[in-house]
Length: 333
Image (cartoon, rainbow, N blue to C red):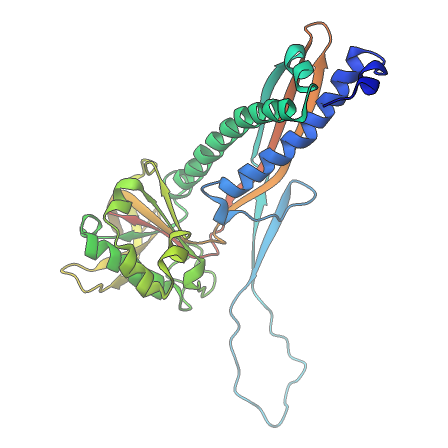
């Protein structure tokens, strides 16, 4: 609680309000950042990369081929050029969330640390809830853009196995095993043979599809504890509506999962010889394939002397992107 001496020596109400507002900005921003980074559903994809500028460049070097050992050491100065591929990931989301607090609320918060905490919590909840909801929807939109609008992800046709609990689980188990081996089958660019450790694979499904998934069997196949595997499964309310109708594709690989029908991996190609029809049931992706880079989180305040209130502005700047160089597939049925 502010002491009598402090209260008696405060020059005017405005100074008190400014001091309180500054304290609220500092305490509120810290709490908002903590909640947003700890509780985001898509937190597993978070990477802090961009410090300056508006974009960063992802560079991959193509697989090298070996030569037979030459004991004579002939032609030591010949060149062997490396093939490089690069993708630019740019800032593509800027949002501002605004909350208004009246002078009466600010003055009350000066009476004790507890009252300041109550006001700070109210601001946190209003801003955090709004920011978290839009972040969640933005990530779902990114998935839709990848698979539907831009068609930059390989498609796995489950061929009717998506509605069968055991078959669906087997399909994911088999894909996870295959994606752990060097191959161009599961990254859209096919630039190089990529591979993903099982602990780096993330399964994105909606709640109805999660209900038929045998997590115990999946944990055994992944050689992970169930509690650890669950952190690599993102369950959302509903999958974005992504449907393919006679989508032109190139066939990549047919996989036997021990069921009546095989599953097939395709790569979208507008001039492809094959077609795929179905709805996206899930995504299986390397955690490096989907990028959520929270570039900026800034909370500022501005007092309106005429209206006697303070506006709080929470600025959000993100890079939400996707790498075609990393393993990721959309499961369709």
